[in-house]
Image 1 (spheres, rainbow, N blue to C red):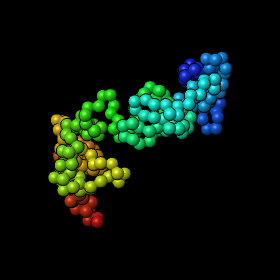
Image 2 (image 1 turned 135 degrees about the vertical axis):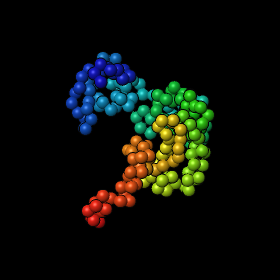
Image 3 (image 1 turned 90 degrees about the vertical axis):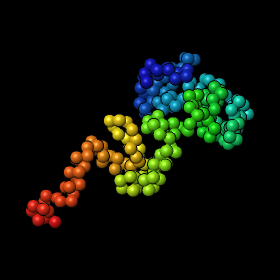
Image 4 (image 1 turned 120 degrees about the vertical axis):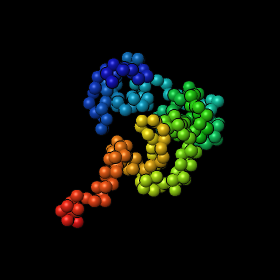
Length: 209
């Protein structure tokens, strides 16, 4: 942090703590020196010693929104002109005339025309979300090995692929997918594991269990 500049402030040195947050002694371009919390500098909430004129953005309009009111330092409640809903947006983004990322119609500059998750799945596994859904349906509605239909934490089931060819093999739950990886996808090891469970040495040779 020392030597870095945040708005009009240049960090001079660490200056203890304010509450639980590490604070820094900063010099403002106006000449004043002030101690400020590091998290306030990094978030952009504080960019001067207080000399910077406060800007009232109420009723300020861009092609994307109209500002309704201030919510907290640096953040404003806006009415989106694309979806008609209210969002929270930082003053810096408003002044740059950036569209709110909370808007359901927001599209990044490099948007491919596909939904984000669908684009990620296509790029990583070479299949679409529709094909993913079709695989699960063909597998009976869940993991191809154990049948689990959803993960405990709510995440979607994993797409399993052949590590040698890179081709998708099916959809598995996290545990089954992880298990295959721990066996290095070696069929002979999996067969030995099956044989081991069917006839444990301690049971067949020592009569235990």
